[in-house]
Amino acid sequence: MDKQIEDKIRGLVSKFYLLRTKEGSEEFDKIWQELNAEIPLEERREAGRILREAMQEARERRKRTDVDVRTGMGDLCDVLSLSYIAQHYFQKDRSWLAQRINGNIVNGKPCAFTESELEILKFALNDIKSKLSGTILNIK
Image (tube, rainbow, N blue to C red; front, side):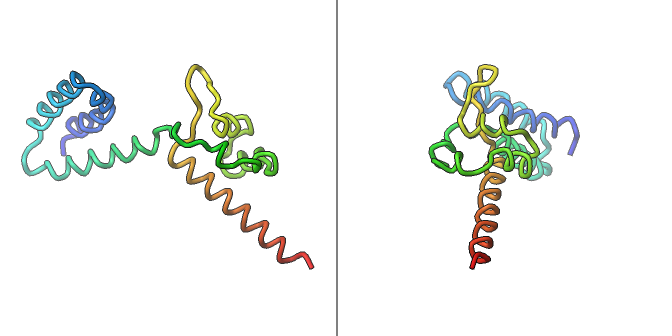
């Protein structure tokens, strides 16, 4: 596939915000029709694959402001070392993790975890759970 067309397909994902309004949807449809006309028929399957990949990448980068981690963790934030979790699992500092857990506003935007960061947090909590379980079994 032509690199220029591939770049246009990937750039199309950044215009998905247009779909929120009727006028934006019409503009998006026009952009999509123009791009679709440029893609040779035999390369449309590959174009679809590229579009799906770009959409998946965009979903992974998207902040999940709909997830309330603070409420979900409850008192665990007081029990666990946020510094340890931030450093060992995210390679960040405690304030970075606390901002996302609490949903703080930084530079005018709410802090939130991405999908991949939520997966890392789940892994971290499961890893700590396993370490605690092992320690409990070793206490006699």
